Image 1 (cartoon, rainbow, N blue to C red):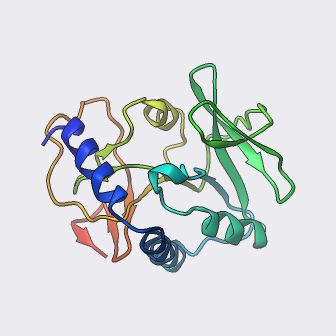
Image 2 (cartoon, rainbow, N blue to C red; image 1 turned 60 degrees about the vertical axis):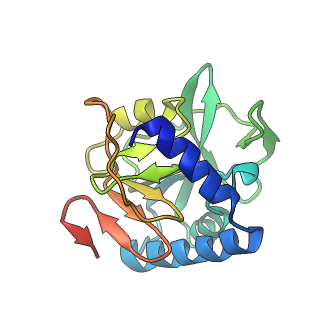
Image 3 (cartoon, rainbow, N blue to C red; image 1 turned 45 degrees about the vertical axis):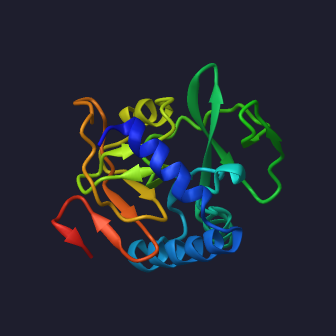
Amino acid sequence: MLKSEFRKKYMQKRKALSTDEAFLLSQDIFRHFTAYFKPVPGQKVHIFIPIKKFKEIDTGLFIDYFLSRDIRVFVPKIVDTRLISVEIFPDTAYEINSWGISEPVSETDSGISDFDYVITPLLYCDAKGNRVGYGKGFYDGFFAGLSIETKKIGVNYFDPDDMIDDAWEFDIPLDYLVTPTAVLSFFSSGLE
């Protein structure tokens, strides 16, 4: 199946979830993430703020958890068609951008590339870690500048079923996918 087909299919599947279903699935994803990765104080996590109208994973659960445990939190902000990473704190001020996404008011790029984890939005991820996003390419550029030790982690309501036929040779695959039922590692063969 092509990325465009996956994009359409999984936008529809997400749209079919009730708000309550999406929240309960987000809680399961959060539990799987914390149980598997066991984040500790001092680590650096880059994580997206969800687009509520697209029923993205509720990452507020993650952000609250990290901030309450002295784990440094960074979120994306688009500045001049480039994704930068802004560190946030409990008192950070936010604004809504032109896409309807909540972003920090600050445009100060942290300049950090050695995150412990980058938790990434997606619509679909196949069994090789190839992801389908919204087609803007922001994360591909962001991934290219990360330290090799950074774990790139997708979160999704749905498990992989079909392969992406038009994955590009320069696409940077994820290292892990966390779903409501499992953690899939692309360093090994199968669900863990």
